[in-house]
Figure 1: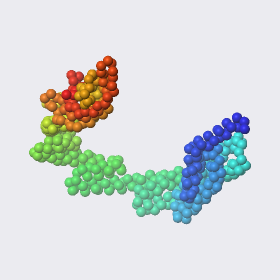
Figure 2 (figure 1 turned 90 degrees about the vertical axis):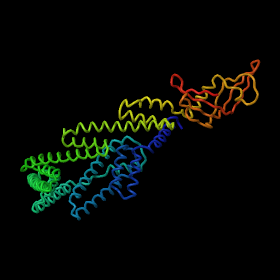
Figure 3 (figure 1 turned 180 degrees about the horizontal axis):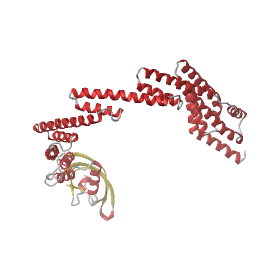
Figure 4 (figure 1 turned 90 degrees about the horizontal axis):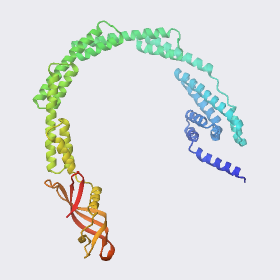
Length: 455
């Protein structure tokens, strides 16, 4: 076999392997699944997608003609069922679908016409391509036009029935539906506008009446909204706009007063945060209502100071319990409510400085503490000389004492294991391991960095 043929075979194999994950192949597999489920419409779209992605997908080419005819047949069946059920819109939309399918088939045939002469394929594949090229569209243009006329006529008739029954909003909708099938159908444009006007007038009268009823019931907010709705349907309807503004203003003043009185009650109960919110709510209804702005500011400030004091005390208690992480957060909260409150910010920083280092950091600190050697007693047996090149392999916390607040250090009792070189006389070295219990102090140096020292 020549080198050229070998390369062609390799490329063909690689192409097949790559095609397994191609967009065309994925769409083809989806089409097969949809066919098994009897959904030929979805299968048709997926097969079209497969061939649009790769016109040379011969499996899709072989499948497409039979699949397409099944999809057409299924759609025609659906159209006839819709016709017998009097669902004329679905009939029209069904023919839209047929036309779209025709266009998809024509596009695939055009692509295949360009592709087919350029490739050398088996007789079976050539026959499949010829079958697809021989496909003819289903001419439904007259049926489509007639379906659109029938749908328009049906909606026009329904609109007339609704208009006679004074269901003007529905009548307007039906006239517009007729126009969606045939623009300018008969006098539907004028009738749609006329029935919409009548519907708007009826709704304006309805909401105007609801507004008057709400006024009698002293429901001023509901009255304002009802008059505004009446105005939204018919601009300038009676005096709806004036009444909407009048009763909105009255409702706003009523709600502002109610919120103001609620604020005063909450002040009496020492709920200053809620009181400030109530005074602010009064302002949202009527800007500059009485002295609500000053009261909102005053009680918001008072609430902030109370919260700052509460978190400050909480931070002090947490410091006493040596819960430094939570203490720092409490002092931060105190400073958040009242910036600069007492010394909360400094205490937060102090508390964070006292938070004990994590296990990994602790091991690093222990390693740094033995850089200049370890006491020979760590080696247990009697040795002479000095230890160097100490490597800590592991530490285990046996006990962690309480933080010493006077000298500011954490006391630890650690089990420390590792290896070292022991320098003895005449330059002789020994490699030794150690496993000992050591008391450590962990403290911060002048640069606020953790350091460790053993006793």
